[in-house]
Length: 385
Image (cartoon, rainbow, N blue to C red; front, side, top):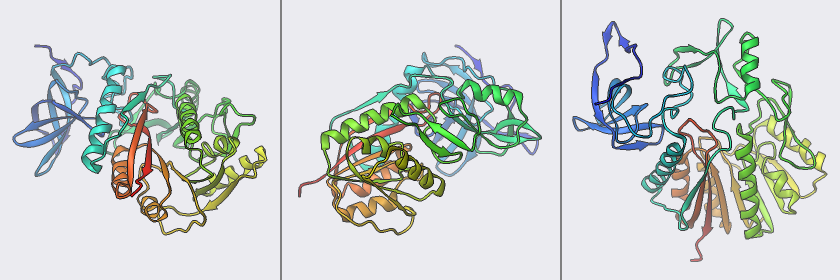
């Protein structure tokens, strides 16, 4: 029997050692947890993989479930590897460095399909593929650090326990150089596609005639190569649908808006964040585009949109787009493309849309290697009846 010690230091509470459990892991769940059964309760175990037997310390225990962290691997998975980051078992950022990359992709696909089936009772009619990341490391263009006495770090998962770090392997190399040579004064470090760090004016290169400009703090995707792949696939899907008019919710600085408008489509771009809206308007002007209208609206509250649209595109934050989904039910738009970074809120919103829409297909993108997070593009079609 193989025994691997992950963390020598036990969690303590009031000078008492939190109890340990031996768990046989049978599944993998959204959030990056291995899942097993202990005394009739479901145990969600961090740092554990399917087919492993682990000794885990209880972090939280409720009537029906247990949250725990694996401390020793008694029977390891054949897919288990040594994490690259020395801070991995303490930092709350990554949660899949202990799995081979190909296995990470398989787990994410399984979690995605299981989640949408369980929460929305939907399955893609035409199957699901997953696009790997070109970079497994050094892919993040933006990192939100925590600061403590000038030191860089993160919080341990689900706590405010500060973990000082010397470098972050998933961060762009220039970000790591920056934190090595500068004391921590602000929690976020961002690098654009031209190597500018923490500039008030950042630049996003989509391979177009002009780059997109945005104000630091406005949302942009952190993995450039995967973002470009999503844009290419989105253009392909939109071209196949060939809509006359598009409404795009949560449009941000124009990451999708500008490339689609350059294809000749008429777009109503809806966004609330003032930094994103001002950046979007500047980018529209730089490309001299006349086929984009901008509407500033809080999409988490009541809002109005006027006009007829053949296609709706959604790219919400992790909170999802429940309010928008309810609005779309009343608009009867022929097609919806929902780009999501969270299978749970996606499933909730698609359950709303399933009253009138069919999920035609889903495609997954590994925007965040070494973590459980999953990006997806989902095509929904209005039912004829």
